[in-house]
Each structure stands twice: as C-alpha cells, then as structure tokens.
Amino acid sequence: MHATAFLGDAGKLDIPPVVVLHGPERYLLRAALEKIVERVLGQGEGDDELGLARFEGSNVDLKTIVDELSTISMWGDRRVIAVDEADPFVSENRSALERYIDKPAKKSVFVLMVKSWPKTTRLAKRVAQVGLDIECSPLKGAALIRWLTDLARSEHGKQLERDAAALMVELAGPELGLLAQELEKLAAFVGERASIGVDDVRTLVGGWRAETTWVMIDALRTGNLPLALVSLDKLLSAGEAPQKILGGVNFVFRKLAVATELARQGAALNTALAQASCFPSEIQSSAAYLRRVGRQTAERIYALLLEADGDMKGGSRLSEQLQLERLLVRLSGRVPG
Image (cartoon, rainbow, N blue to C red; front, side, top):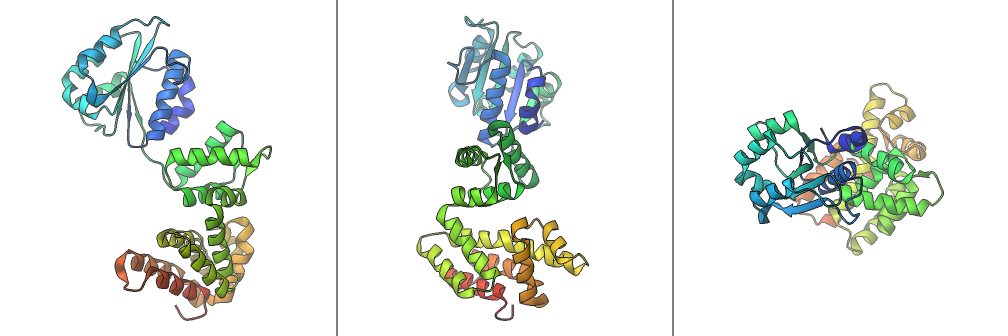
C-alpha cells in the first residue's frame, strides 16, 4: 500500500502489531508515523508523545526494543515503538525479527522505518501476512498533482486548480515537504478566497524571477523578441540558473509542441491546446503564436527544445547565455529553426 492511500483510508484501518514504513520520501514517512500514533494512541506525534518511543536504528540493540515493546504504558493501554533509519537494525536482527513477528506484543505497535524493503525476503513476506507495509516513495506526474490538490482540500479547505498545482511542481520541485510548505503559504495568501490559481502561484512561489520568466515567455509568444531577450538577461544577471530558465521555457513550449501534433492529426487548434494542458487563460495567445510562427517552426518546437537540453548538458561550446538566446530567437520564428 502506498502512503497516500494509507493516509486517506487510515481512519478506517485497524493498525496491526507490526508496521513497516519504507522508502526515501521523508515527508510521507513522518506523515504515516503521525497517523499511526493518532490511530493507536489517540494523539498527534507532538502531543507530549505519551506512549510513543522513538529510536535510531544505528544506536539501539534488539534487547532494548523488545523490552520497550513488552513494557506496559503508564499513560494508557497501548504503546508505539518506532525505529527510524532502521536498515542496519533490520540487517543485524533479521532472524530475531521474524521470530518476534510470529508472536508480537499485544499492547504495542512496532514501527520500522527503512529506506529499502525487498518484498522477496522472508521477513517482508511475514510482515505482509500479519502486519502492514506502507510504501513511502516519491510521487510523480499525475499522482503528484492529485496529492497536491487533495492536500489543499483536506488540510486547507481550498480548491487548488490543476494548472496551479502543475506550476507549483515546476517552480518548487517534486519534494513533498517543500510543496506542503508552499501550499500552506498559498492558503494563507489567498485568505477567504476558496481557490488557489496560477497567478497566486506565480506571485508567491516563484517570486519576481518566476514573474520575469513569464514576462519573457509571454513576450516570445506575442512576438516581442527584444523584451524576451531583455528579460532573459535580467534573470541571468540576477543569478538564475540557466537550467531553471530552460525548464520554464520547456514547461510552456512542450505543451505547444504537443498541441501542434494534435492539430496536425486533425484537431481544432484551440481544442488541441486544451488537450495539451495549456492554461485556459493562455489558449488564445498560444493559438495566435502558433499561427504567427507558422507550421514549419511549430512542428520544430520539440526538436528545438531537445537540442537546447542536450547543448545545456555539454553538447555545445557556446556559453549558456548564448544557447538560451539562440533558443528564444528560433522559437520566435524570426529565423529558420
């Protein structure tokens, strides 16, 4: 079971005596542990942690853990014993852990938090039979967007527009903890307003650099190449990473490349842009751009982006600024691709 499913359904689940949280995504590991503590002890992880004992896997031995699991709580009838960074602990005590799982303590929940959890081991198979293993792996693509919009609704009572969620990921990256922090700031920023839109994300998450990037892209789309080049120079002079600038261009123009292919296959241009997930507010300007640059340039967009990416990774002797300037000029349709 993935952690996102567990967090959504945890209120309906009985927590078994043994739970393994595995994977590299620390935000999900922490959230899953907090939900387990809430379900078992009726409190959050930070509520004085009564009944919760946490240990580091590299600094604890098996006897200490077994003693803790067997100890009756003074504050209630159940306990949660969690071993964090438990990979070395599991490796050293695999056989003993298998024996423990056969006869676990009745009043305690034993939580192992590990990065790696091969499903083919005997220990993993035993946990799958009598316990619960929860995957805390990173989210990507549609799953990441869905998690972000669900979090906005459940934690903040806000509707996060899908385009706004996609832009958050583009600007802040895929790390869940950071995205959760940005979402909290956005919820406070919009105040009583029920929804969080693209403009909110541009203003708060990206700051002036994101605004300048969109000025550059909008200028390129509307045929104002001089303004696009000036905006590019401002970004580079302020220390913005060339790779991040290229990422912003890719975020917009890959959608235009997809729309071009859909239109080539027979879809109406506005319909193709919508199907390519272009922001609704930008469909008209995007359609005008594609008509202005013409079919030859439009059908070369994806190849131009791919070439720029390869050049940025060492495929060109030109400076990164010149590489980006060349890309903007080519995308403007001023010269052949």
